[in-house]
Image 1 (spheres, helix red, strand yellow):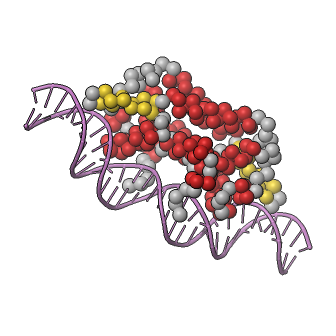
Image 2: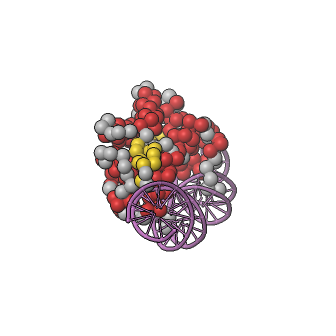
Image 3: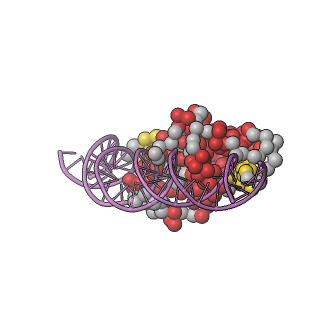
Length: 107
Length: 107
DNA sequence: TTATTATATTGCAATATTACGATAAACAAA
DNA sequence: TTTGTTTATCGTAATATTGCAATATAATAA
């Protein structure tokens, strides 16, 4: 088939899968890394930082934005992209839950 | 093209992307969830828990194992799969780093 | 108005993923 | 041995992802 049976899983499971999918490509990890090293949030020069064409980077940015991992605000002609700390919190909480449940396990 | 330009990114970036890709499907999130709710680690019955055929689940387990998110040890005819806490640590550390770097940002 | 600059969208080819039936492999029990 | 039980692999169809050239859009500058 190819399409995932997302109906069969919980909303929470689908949400987490969507977040991880947004982070599942090295270019998108690199974009997040870059956003974290730049002092200001003005980030139109990501194109110069990565070995990918502008449309490809625009596409990766869109996926990160759709997943709420970054947010972008228009700043004249440029766009200011930056990390959305709320989503980072969400992912951290998920792993906190995993860590908590692991405490009582045999592994 | 379709293939990602993994050569162009750092080893660390590729590693994290691989980990997130392993978690980027609701069925694999559900498998991790299930492993966390079961007291013992004997997990051959995941097939009964998820609405997917046995070969599909075997494939998802293989991907989780390749990414070191779970480990499996042979237990007679069955296989005991369980979470690999080391990999959970690795992911948590990554977000710890993100959180740390975010402290000084404008977002 | 006409550039110029920054970003997004479209369209398409190459590749990867997902799902499952059929089958194989490995092992225990009868 | 044969039978059943458990897990893995093969083959294949349906779908999704990736990357980029070409083009479009939007805002500013001249």
